[in-house]
Image 1 (cartoon, rainbow, N blue to C red):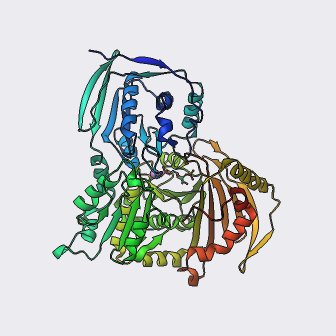
Image 2: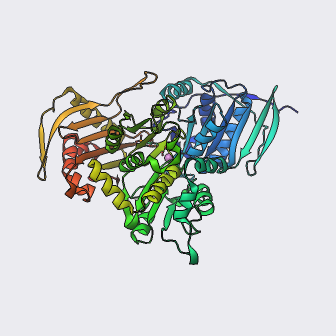
Image 3: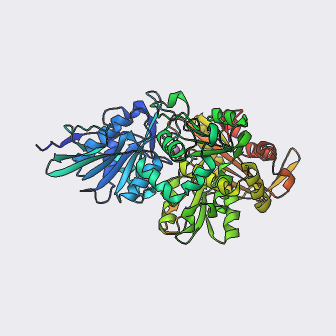
Length: 562
Ligand code: VG1
Ligand code: CO
């Protein structure tokens, strides 16, 4: 018997504008009658070749995820989609979605996550659309989705369609005049198989495998932070690489992440930092809620900044089989605020280095055009053209491959890197949940400095002097399709190559978050092991003075420093 398609009248909701990475709001907002449905209808309306298409649906397991899967599947059926691939229990990491879209050549996918934002009935939910290359929707699609949400009048749904996503298998339905297939897939299988083709699992097993007596001389600690990576971590590190049952913690995905911020940085992943400080482990990694971010630590809590991490990986591709085939490394890239360490690797290798706006969506075109192999963001995002999202587990495996080939502590790997290239010291200050109006005002004032009024002006603090060379608001022209993104952050560039960047976050669910990025480049070897806060302190003070950030935000101190 054919299931009935119902067209329901609806009215636009304000503020359904996707930010840096999808639409993120409080769960309560998504729970409003028609809110989620409206947004999904507008996503479906931008899918190319929707009729008979295949789409992937999955998420990080946070609260409201299963309900959203149910709505999406019912709406896909009603809108003529031919097949939906759903992760078992609605679970798929963001990198796994990207891989499934590519492997199964689908028209796209919908990812249910608010990434590293807390989850639960009172916390955040998010919906993100990925296009057929596996990457986040670009500005052209997100603008079209947003436009749709401002005028929407009706959506289509198939209320009678009942699905069971708790077990793997395929089920067919008759909806209106067409066939509709729901295929529930194993959440980790395809991803794990893919990782085995990218890395040499035998080499990694050699490094990690528990030796006789249950002891390994190379112990690791992986913290999945109660997010989606848990099942992936168990399968890869425990089952495949035999790193032992105690190599990973917090590996069960929880709807509220156990009440924590599933955000792998020095503040929110403090448990891992403390564990590493014990000196028991050679390597530590933590991932965010949806599995695309990573933090990498060495023995005694040695912190590798994400900006350095991607540079070291790019410099050591010989340790990763994937990069030995297909013509090697084609090009490198980073987001604008990310520290410039990778630029130096690119120039030594003689490959291009691209600087794009914040957000992974800007890397996709470059990868599709064969111009980019490895890229990263300072916000704990690292990845390559193996998929079109950043990939936390991939980054950990990349690092372990490097350590397996170099057989020396991470601290020494970094020291060697800085000795070769010099060190780009980097820090980011976040002022979360500020009032929006004064923050916008501050950005306006900073933007006005692009006129050149401060060019050539000297600033001194704590014995250090910097001269402003130029101030601008970053603008990017995509070299592949010529699209232009404007006002991506105010850059204050100093004459010695140091710089300060200000921008407002596009991932928060309420209020405004100011991000201040500070970087300086040192070639004096005696500074290399210094604390970044100590080295950057004077420039931080100067940045606060120029921006009058404390005045505008009313904050003495940042919420998080990384
Ligand atoms: C932040 C980061 C950005 C990252 C984005 C999505 O955006 O700065 O680098 O791509 O989050 O990451 P914003 O606009 O808040 O600065 V995730 O792991 O939330 O998908
Ligand atoms: Co994320």
